[in-house]
Image 1 (tube, rainbow, N blue to C red):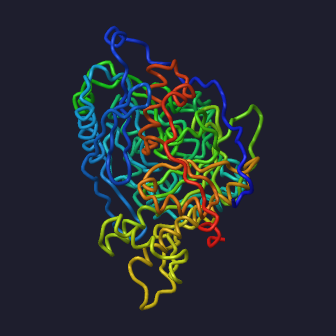
Image 2 (spheres, rainbow, N blue to C red):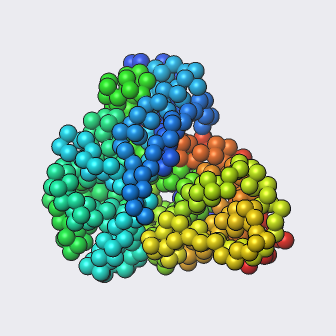
Length: 527
């Protein structure tokens, strides 16, 4: 393979208990425990009902929520559309599962990140949300890198990279371009935080989110800060970039992924179709919750790289956070983040901003079903007979971070058909993943043994094989290919049935269904 002979990884084997398990209520002691997991994605809200073995009993997807693009590189959504869709999806999943709502003990959310909201004092949005992929704050990201140079809160030794998608650039854009919104905003938070607030009435930040997107120390953030608010905040960086007033607008408390936030309110239960006594467990960004659904952080299989796919690709490496130890940084990658995704872990990531989104764009242009397009592309050789593509339609992340990067189709001739363009885009995404893994490999103690994949890629046998061939790694697919949904269920069930032990829940609930090996003949042309 591209990383030498696969080796057995030795990452993340720990007896992990996060937060306080859900106390049994009189009504819950005598019933089988079920959990509801919700994935608020870029395009729609999905929900699933799971039992303690990880079996998906019922699922439902709400109608897609609209994304508006006011200008090139901008992307916005309505927060109310998420809440409406969440109600429909949870009700639909419960109906599909044909279960008694009284058997559901926990609810957990995985959402997009970093989708930023400005809220008034009542928790109502003051403007549409800046979607995670919104890159309007690219100039602000450059300014932050210059103003905050060498600040330890900037990853990789104080030099970045820094994405325009993250909290600080978006907050700086809001402050500079919509000062009236900034002045009225009592809270600046993420999609995750607002939906948790709608469920419980508690406004809290997420431990994983603040570690990965807010430049905070994810371990210290779980404790109260010395100046109010939660700990581990990048106080020096905020001051240097002119955002010293942002900390007061962040939620005052931070809750670790997997810990209980509180009971779901009666009003929210009515909206979601839940019975009383349901507890909300902290989730996080969909890709990072998806790591648990991939089993990357423990048994049943050993691996150190997860690939979560959808509108974008995220390549995620996880290692145990040892006292006093600092994993070495990976050039061109983000992290390592302390306390992410869970309090005793550290994580580094690579990413591609528009992978599935680029294919959806192409499908709208070309027509045809995904299967038809794949079948046509499969008949072509690697390289698509000279047709090449760049998949960076919404900017680039790894190994070169450039929010202003744009996509391209190259080498076109009158011979080429839609099949050539489709295959070129598939290959471009796979080669982008290979480049991200090459960058991550510099921070790993040993080559990755396999690539655990979830999301849209798993629905295409052709694209799965291309990922294996291009990277030289075996590709593992879980029995439930929607890793964020399963990961949320793991977090909920860890509290409901496993005493807060996330690893025990992973061992009981996550299973591998398919293994796709790289083909020597198929892999060689990618070199």
